[in-house]
Structure formats: structure tokens, C-alpha cells
Amino acid sequence: MDGIAILSAAFFLILGFLIGWIVEWRIDATFWSTHLAELNRREMARRARIDEELAAAQLRAEQQLAELRSQMEADMANARARANQQVAAAHAKAEAVMAALKSEHELREAAFVREYERNLADIRMMHAPHATPHRVEGEQPAAGQPTL
Image (tube, rainbow, N blue to C red; front, top):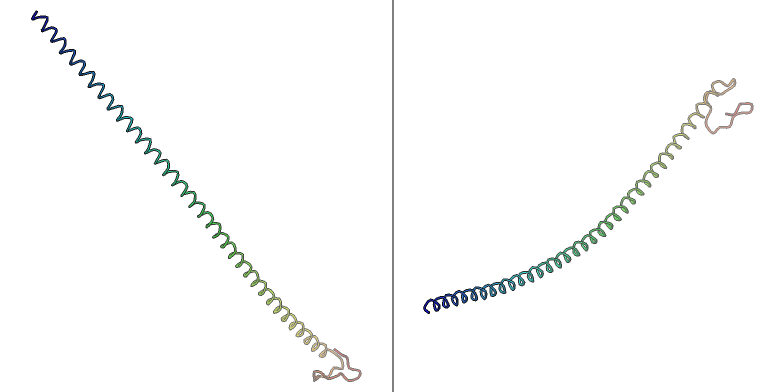
């Protein structure tokens, strides 16, 4: 009987170890499954927070881009207006210079015409058969003298 008692004690000892091992394994499995669930929950929360931050950053970037675009359009409109003013001023200045040059040209042309007519009158007087050599301007020609 001693053999059966030893065998039975050994069997219960082995059975106790097996039951202990199964209980420990179950405790470990429960711990790790809850630990993994907690890690997954934290990871999901972190991803959600990152997604929110990313969406907020993207919204801020789009707002800044819209502000910069409107500012650039306003700056371009101002630059275009200044350029148009400068072109108009240059055009007006060119018109004024052209008018002054035209007036100066007309004055020179009139002076050349007067000088030409005076020279022509002098030449006619020199070649006229009965011209008086010293004629005073504004004096009326005598009867029978040619008029110039």
C-alpha cells in the first residue's frame, strides 16, 4: 500500500502542479489580454488625437493659405493700379512732350517760312528791273513799283 499511497501522492502532486500551471496560465492570459486591450485603447486614442491635430493643422494651413492668397491678390491689384497710374503718367508726359515738340516745330517752320519769304522778297527786289535798293519795311511802294 505504500506504493499506492506514493503513487497516489505523486499523482495528486502532479495534478496540483498541472492545475496550478493552468490557473497561472489563465491568470497570465487574462493579464496580457487586458494589457493588450489597454494598449490598443491607448493607441486608438493617440491616433484619434493625432487625426484631430492633423485636421486642425490642415484647417489652419488652409486658412493661412486663403489669407495669403487674398493678401497676394490685394497686393497684385495695388501693383497693377500703380503700374496703370505710372503708364498713364508716362503717356500724359509723352503727349505733353509731343505737343511741345509739335508747337516748337510749328514755330520753327513758321520762322523758316518767314525767312524764306523775306529771302525770296530780297531776291525779287534784287532782280526786279526798277527796284529801289533801300526800301523801308512798312513803306508803301510808289506808283508803278511792283509789290512783293
